[in-house]
Length: 356
Image (tube, rainbow, N blue to C red; front, side, top):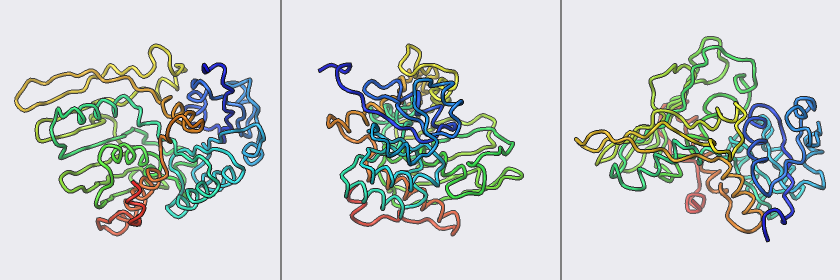
């Protein structure tokens, strides 16, 4: 049966702030087999200006329990992730939660156990697995072009010296740069290298008048290599997105994936220019001249395509419970390490590690 003859899965998007508006709504709308049916927001005019066809419901619980909804996507503030995801699972819905999954490991474990009990689909939105920069670096590593990796450095740096009035920059549970960008950095690293032996975190508040952390430098310790994850709000330029050194060479990806910029500019996901990255990878192989390698296209729609297939029984969950839990464990270990000044093992049980 062709895609157009299969009834679409109806999606309720909870939250229409920056993340819901910029990422989730366009990506859902661009995924065949998914229909953005409901948006939960207190600003119906804002939603209908972009999405005139959707039903807007102010109360998130009413949207979650709506009988026509198959999938609930939670893109509301971080502190609401756990209670809203819990309500959606108990309502019998498939659930996608924006990163970070929850505020802590205890909440993450409870949601995973609840989804298992009710046999409901539960996933975390890790769209940056399909970023052009990450796909390019991953390809170089997997092809063995730089040999065995000894140093992997991943930066998401911005220049925003002024503290803005928004919940992410207020001293609230789940706020701060580490919980905002850390999950992306961590998930990509774990996809490449698996679980580290220990984590060293240095997390700070550097901008004048900042209420919550706006700088993080985290090292993941592996037996034969090190992974550096870094994010900052005070980096005006001069830093590569990825720098990777191996025993046969190095690869540098200077500029970041452009899909977020494209979404902000109104580019339709899946259109001809979608995910195009003209910033080549620089390959340094010993004393050979530097080679410029083309960067593959990115396509964050792949996350929702895999979610669709998994719910239909035609594929696997793109972000499993074990993967979601591991990201939370690194987030938590880095935060605790920064507070204690010690390298810490992941706070996971033997069974949770084995599940990885």
